[in-house]
Amino acid sequence: MRCCCRRLRLLEVLLGPLLVLLVSGLGPVRTEKVYTNTWAVHIPGGQEEAERIAAKHGFINYGHVFGDYYHFWHRRVVKRSLSDHRGTQVRLDKDPKVRFFSGATYNGNHRDLNAKAAWQLGYTGKGVVVSILDDGIEKNHPDLKQNYDPDASYDVNDGDPDPQPRYTQLNDNRHGTRCAGEVAAVANNGICGVGVAYNAKIGGVRMLDGEVTDMVEAQSLSLNPQHIDIYSASWGPEDDGKTVDGPAKLAKEAFLRGVTEGRNGLGSIFVWASGNGGREKDSCNCDGYTNSIYTLSISSSTQNGNVPWYSEACSSTLATTYSSGNLNEKQIVTTDLKSKCTDSHTGTSASAPLAAGIIALALEANKNLTWRDMQHLVVRTSHPAHLLTNDWRTNGVGRKVSHSYGYGLLDASAIVALAQTWTNVGPQRQCVISMVCEPKNIGFHLSINKSVDACIGTNSHVTSLEHVQARLTLSYNRRGNLAIHLISPAGTRSTLLHPRPHDYSSEGFNDWAFMTTHSWDENPTGAWTLEIENVAGASDYGETFSVITPVNNLGKKNQ
Image (cartoon, rainbow, N blue to C red; front, side, top):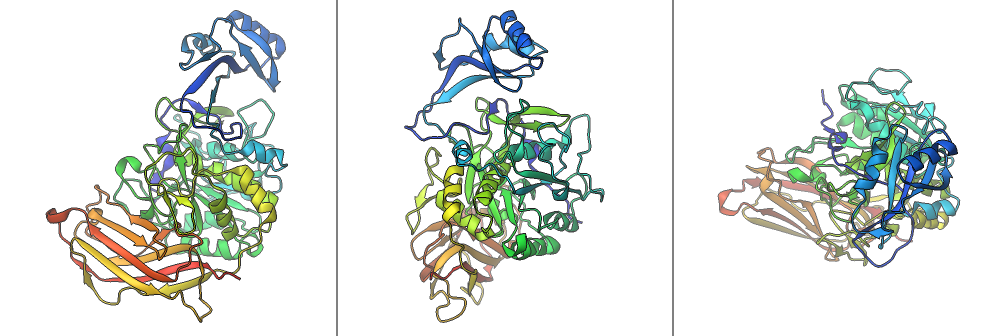
């Protein structure tokens, strides 16, 4: 029996809110956060109660924002400051009548996911159904119940239609409800916030609160595929820097059936968190869920555009959204258990639902998009601007791509604009090339070169790449000392595996499919190079390298 090991909610440990949706627009980079002398304060009880609390604590009520939110101003606080006003706001923090407050800040670089601009184009997720595969969803939460969809929900753990989470003293099963609010929290009701796709229908599958077997995963992944458009998942194998694991037989079949039969043949869209194993030097290419061609893998950036401490780098990541970072950086505001709100949702767990919401906006703009169309749109509209890392590279078609961020930050406005006029891609073609037919010794460095014609003259001829897989079978005395790279004919270098210092396994890899998205739209014809390196040098040794079968160029033929 196979149990779920990576529960990404365990990393919800940092402090400070990150508003999910910020003002759109791009400007010159400015890293300083500027604190103003105004606050958004949530006070039930009406205008008179807000006036009373403002006067009590030395604030002036500038008026009603919406719902139970009011605009407070303090005359003795400087209008703009590079330090926060903790001494002033501690009085609000201690007042039992104040449910939530947030000091207004702004950044000169206007970093955001551009959701407001997508809403202004008229797209709010209406007509799109999203299901959160997790530990349940609080279906009667006041910020969710208007959008709750029972047909997108099920309790796989207990075998009944009710996905309500199991309540504990520590609120362990809060993860799914938090993810759901990011997607479809209702707008303008004065409760927690607003979901990216606030008019989408939202459901939840309770499947992590128990023994997570292959059957449980498969049942969850295949729930009502003609009704559910998008499945969002923030879980997978353990992020310990030594595990290599992925979907088993039934889950693999569920993925394949989903993309071939779901949404009346257009394909179910699976959005997956890339993983939180950064502290353990883990690689998301050792996670067979996020490394799958069938999932849209999403990583995280901190508020200030840095790689978070928990982020895993790999070549299968497609794009990025914002999430938590260091102690002084904000986190995600969303729904929480017992009809409450939270300002501390964190990790790539929080990034995947934001992406699911943006994808829901794109599906509203064009309901005829296939699962592969959606990945094309993400590649073409994501932006590297403001995301900081030293591994940005320009691939063979001129796009910047990173192992930490994929193609960059998702842009809701850009993706809906392109979706409106998008022409569906043709059928997927798969060209299989065997690069090695006999065992080879790895030594300190093994380089394998292969000239490829991309199956020209056959029905498998590929002229424009999407995913590239390298399926490896090899033995090695300490797997964590291996680094593996794939270089395309255009010169794009993908790191399929970086060294993992905690991986002492001598099991090697048995037909493991490493995947890269970094050569998207490149022509596969020409010389490919696979490099396998022993980074331990003289302190370690290579045994036998048996076979690589095959390299899969999964793409399309240009018309």
